[in-house]
Length: 299
Ligand SMILES: Nc1nc2c(c(=O)[nH]1)N[C@@H](CN(C=O)c1ccc(C(=O)N[C@@H](CCC(=O)O)C(=O)O)cc1)CN2
Image 1 (cartoon, rainbow, N blue to C red):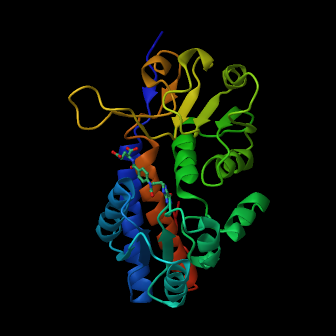
Image 2 (cartoon, rainbow, N blue to C red):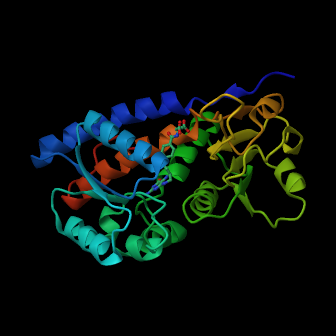
């Protein structure tokens, strides 16, 4: 049995960021200003702090303006909504992202609903979710769009392929299924209550695992040659003497390598695509907000 090809999301994301940088330069030449991304972080969740720092660095490196707003964990919904309103009205801000998860006392849906759909570069607003559902152009959530880029790069046309998405979140599972359907795949959404999950996964040419359970998908669930996209980022408990546990996905990577045709690693697979696509969505938002045509070759 040959080893699965490793889908290098890190390298793909680096190329995408480079292309976004070229588009950002075209936007600046056409509009006389840089495209701008505002990121709002409430509280001190360690992982969120890392992601927000990475977003700032990547935004600046792509030649865009980064506006970072760090608010204390006890920020009220009134204050957070007032900041979102201020960013909605700011012409230098093309994209707004409120880092999730929010502290428990804040309602994520209310905050997302307050973001202007035209600046919702996360694609989480109900208007953008609706646009995706009916095939209109809007903003598509970054992680599933990144997964689609990796899939089409490897497989080309997805027409008629059997795809199983494990997980039904608004952020990954549902938009992922929608994108696969738009690409003419035959799509099943599976979840924790699916009967005979291994049997359902076994018929898939494409498996997208976005369930948030460490190494849940086993090698013997997979069809020979399947393309496996692992969205999970789970930290295992630290080994004795170690400070941090290892990061693993939702798929038993070592086992799956002997069965799958191709697989994304964790880390270095889907994760880096999330930030690269965020930059892509921001530059697209900038062109649209200025009423400019998107440059030729925009992904
Ligand atoms: N408003 C949003 N909040 C969150 C989103 C989002 O898309 N919008 N997604 C995640 C977090 N996230 C970006 O925000 C994100 C997660 C993971 C990675 C990444 O590159 N992961 C690395 C591993 C990093 C590590 O060592 O911990 C990888 O997989 O290689 C980037 C961005 C939740 N919140």
